[in-house]
Image (tube, rainbow, N blue to C red; front, side):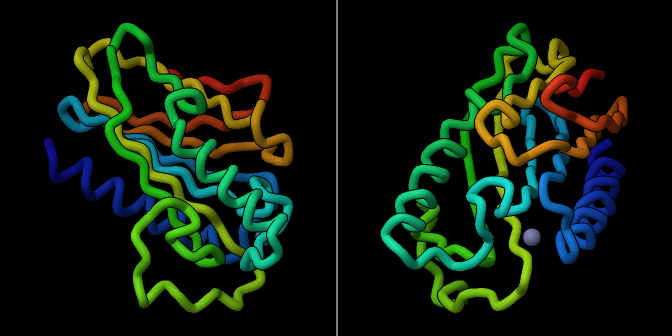
Length: 179
Ligand SMILES: [Zn+2]
């Protein structure tokens, strides 16, 4: 069943990539997938909704806000809450944005990424990887981003496993993706 899941994810991520070019402020996208005991959650969020700006950070104040944001996003297990019964542990976080040098986000510096984007809009991509002791018990993902990031209003969420596909519009008052 690996191939169909991979194909669907490819379709989902290309749809998300299209959305990024003209994103709506306050609206993010989330793609979750479960393969074996690995639960992956990929978020694409307008940088403006996280920082209040979406250009390259230059002032000391901007830089401090970006570092604070990276620290917050790296503590992903307080922002993304899989069903407790599944025993999922966060094993990896990757952060990337066209507007922010990778080292500011706690990633390795890459020469290719050094030039800042001149695009009007910028997203932040956050990839979370969990390893779950009891993946069959994984039935829900609660997304707690709305408490921390008040400018974020909606997350269009999708889930794909070998057995189910779900889509949900998550908001501050409806924050659970359930399957
Ligand atoms: Zn924007």
